Image (cartoon, rainbow, N blue to C red; front, side, top):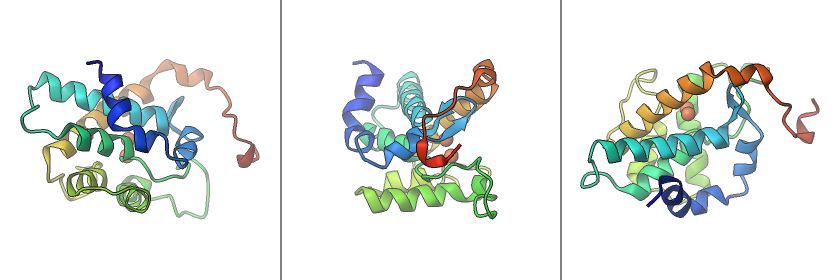
Length: 164
Ligand SMILES: [Fe+2]
Ligand SMILES: [Fe+2]
């Protein structure tokens, strides 16, 4: 089965949630929105698990849901503000986990994988293999997105609320 199809099936509840609108309106790296980044991370995490033949050890649904929610912090971390988001790299895993717990019923694998996905920047490593897959897939995706030349042709986001 196609990876995108698996992500769509297991991630349906998350992808359809109204707060995903916020992720569609915030750039994460370069020209990639947080929404698109999260889908990339989910697809890549599944691909890595497949390549490493980890299916007897990985819960596919938890892996996909954790990957889709790993950056569910729901603000634009590039926006200048009073400094609340200055510690973004260190704090957003916890913020994403709390937001996700408010909006969805998460199991412990999903919670831990979201909260600790910034390891080794943050001190606690993930406790489950799903968390390591999200962490690795996130680092690879973030690097690709940040280095992409597309960022120099960044289109304006259609976001009337931002006032820009
Ligand atoms: Fe993140
Ligand atoms: Fe990320």
